[in-house]
Length: 309
Ligand code: COA
Ligand code: ZN
Image 1: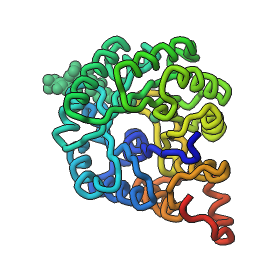
Image 2: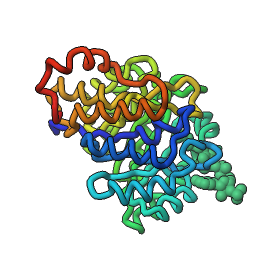
Image 3: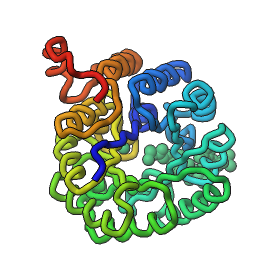
Image 4: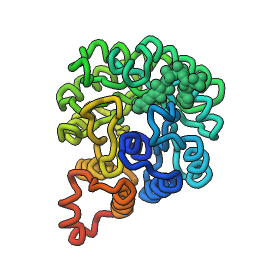
């Protein structure tokens, strides 16, 4: 099994979509550049959804095309697209990597995208067909895989069946999401193991939120289950405007530190990652940072071994 993990940084998208502060395109580009400098090689840069639904990301077209011009050589930049219109916009901006999605919960699907899960599957199928024809890399999200903010606990068999269905559409990567951050470590490990049996584990990701402070515990059981791709957000920014109660994503710095403790490489330069956290904090104008922050700030000067992790 791989002794490295791949971090899929979602700060500029999941991280900013629910922030009170609306960043300018210039500020978003500075954040993306800082993340790239820290060694994050896959970044979900923005989301091509309706500008009225998520005004924070209304400048997706400009952000994507400028990010590609500035960082496209060293970073894989991904755009979230939940319908064909979003796909059209992403491709027009020059984007060659997109992420689509389906929720297991019918209620969440309606509230989030005004689509039933059947309609969301149909949208993903059309996006996948277009992506295949265009040679565009495609990730799919399975949202609310463990808990829905409206329906509560999700029946695991349903999540497994939906994951299988998304996988069979022919995606390059599948990310299983704890959208609201209410999953527990044992359920996370069990579900990922089950899904991993029917998919290619090396292309399976997990998307965790840290709402109930179990993000790292959930990440640990996901690693035990064999998952090596993790979504996380700089400073633990994040949340879904359509998932009441969802707090930030698992913080990238917490994930990098966990991987370091477990002997798994990430390629991230920890000192530079803190520069990105500081920048994100300045831009959103409120205190952020993962659980490791206070320890790091107190002890980092005595720990010169931390560089590329
Ligand atoms: N980008 C910009 N405009 C879009 C669009 C997109 N991706 N999708 C639809 N539209 C426009 C259509 O062109 C149409 O415009 P018109 O009235 O001027 O003709 C209008 O929106 C309605 O189109 P419709 O197909 O009915 O879409 P919708 O209004 O049901 O919106 C979503 C569907 C998914 C785009 C919308 O619900 C959305 O953006 N949700 C946000 C979800 C999200 O970001 N969640 C957090 C991350 S998971
Ligand atoms: Zn999320």
